[in-house]
Length: 103
Image (cartoon, rainbow, N blue to C red; front, side, top):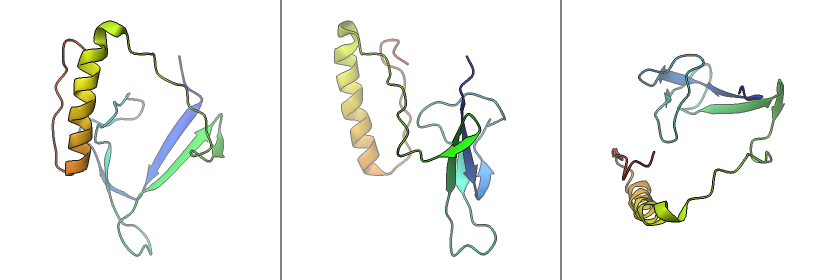
């Protein structure tokens, strides 16, 4: 199923490893590196979103929710949640391996 949503990332200094047009990306995957172009005052990212070809405000868009977590996966989810929250607060590169077959 093709989505009507297209994301645009401008002013990048380079793309992340393996990034190609049309390739699906995962959450937390590095897709590019911040850059500086034109008369900018410093490195930054220009993020834009279109829906059905029209630019929209991504902060006002209602995105679909994910599937609920099944009870059998809840313990692993809660452990992973704590791990990820700690990682987000550290600001250091970290690899999260799948736990118990969860993706």
